[in-house]
Length: 176
Ligand code: URA
Image: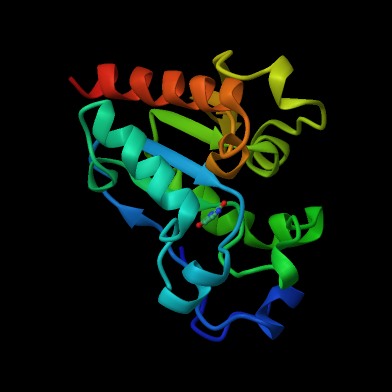
């Protein structure tokens, strides 16, 4: 299930250039879920192609895999104005598409607080849950989930960078 090209299920349709659909492969069953497209992603119609994408790709490379080995997506498929966090209502409107993307997933990586809010219902601080694996329920099926920092949060925060690196190394080990 994917949004119609002229999807108007939430207000984010007003400002978008492109609906940003997942990128990569469904084959490994590993899905990275970010927050929302930013300006670069909105322009190119592809997730994680700006600074956050560079950070993610660099860590994946160091861990021995590439973005094309996994699926990369977001809680919402359209860019929120001024890069604000997506609202609960916007995430709920986009949820059926995310659930379709997670249909066969074996491991989901939640990148940052919006992904953890959407998929775990978590409203607390990231440092209390980072890299603690849990199980989430997607359409009646239990799926392994690892909460971690968003790449953007690692730019000025060494600890966050080390934690995200640890998450991505775990994925690298699984892929070997
Ligand atoms: N940040 C995200 O959460 N998603 C993207 O696609 C790009 C930046």
